[in-house]
Image (cartoon, rainbow, N blue to C red; front, side):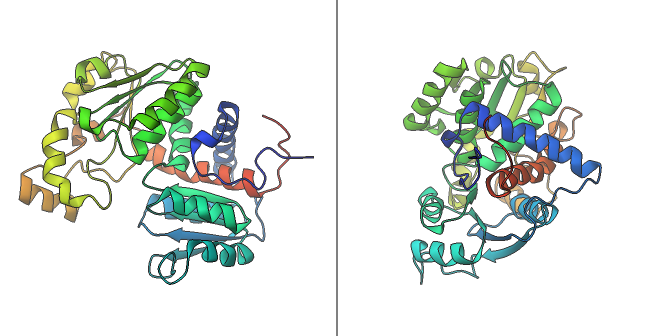
Length: 338
């Protein structure tokens, strides 16, 4: 009997139905409970997992490593200096080699084309740990966190403030539209998502009933928010644009005033995929302060430390979400339909 997920790659949210994404979210919640109760769940016993990282990471690497170990698999980290991906060996050749040795492959890097090529030629499930276009494993963790808190997803309003054309904003827009979550991207006009991403989300929203807002008007966009979400103002590889980004995005900083504008302070939650520049406790933040005089960037420390800020639960949930994705696609589980 066929299993819904077995052998499939997890490359972008758009490749899955609402029901499939909800299954992964609920499965992640279940696996979290098993771990908390110390109940073994070694669905991938004896499997070998390759972790390919063009981009550095704290949460993604940790989450995949612990998730693989909990599932009984053996993860092998291959960083940018360990592999010849696209330099001395083509992506296609690399995919064929790794696919012959490993049972599953995670990739975190720049081009979406790279992870799609790996999936096409590896012959084993490939999981997108982040590309410049999408961040799908983050989404399972994010909406898992939201469901844990509110008990449901449909009808909630998620507001993303900041750089609206990065991978997290793309994924939030499309995943919200798929799941029936109302979503607002609140950004300067030049940093709103691309038309292609917007049109994709609008098509999903027609079926789910999700309401989509794209606006540079902060008060209008954040009104009624149940979830406030932000991300760093400068993505990896864009550090040279720091001065421009600060000037453009400072009005969109998630601070006490912006939270008040939602009219829902008593019930909302704050999310951030991390790392966050909310104080001066990092070398990068100190450099930004010395150059631009900014002690806080996309979120103030007041909001970051508030009781409604759930970013560390969200970070932990990365591991449970990734575990669900790997187990469902590689664990030969009995999932004939969702």
